[in-house]
Length: 135
Image (cartoon, rainbow, N blue to C red; front, top):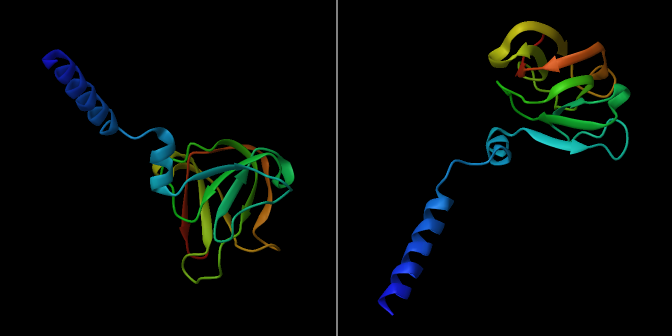
C-alpha cells in the first residue's frame, strides 16, 4: 500500500515537473506574435499583420505578425503583403536577412493593398523584420 502511494506521488511529481519544462517552439512563437499559416487564396493575411509567402504572388505557406520579430524563423520567402493599419511612424516594415535586424535590408514595405504587396526580386531569407516609420 505504501509503495503504491509512493509511486502515485512520484508520478504526480514527474507530471508536475513536465509541465514546468521550457516551452515548445510553437509556444515561443506565440509569445512573440509570430504566426504561420497556409493561404486558402492568394494574399491571405490577417488584418494588421505583415505576411511573407513561400511562393510568388502571395501563394503557399506564410508567416508573419503584427509586431516586430527579431528572429523570425520564416526562412526563405518570395512575396509579401503589409496588411497593417495606417499609423504614422509605425506602418512600414523593414525586412532583414539576419536576426536582430542585421545584415542586408531587403526592403521597406509600405502598407495597404495597392503599395504593400508584391514579390521580392528572387528568394529572400527573412531573418528579422521591424515595424517603423516612413523609409
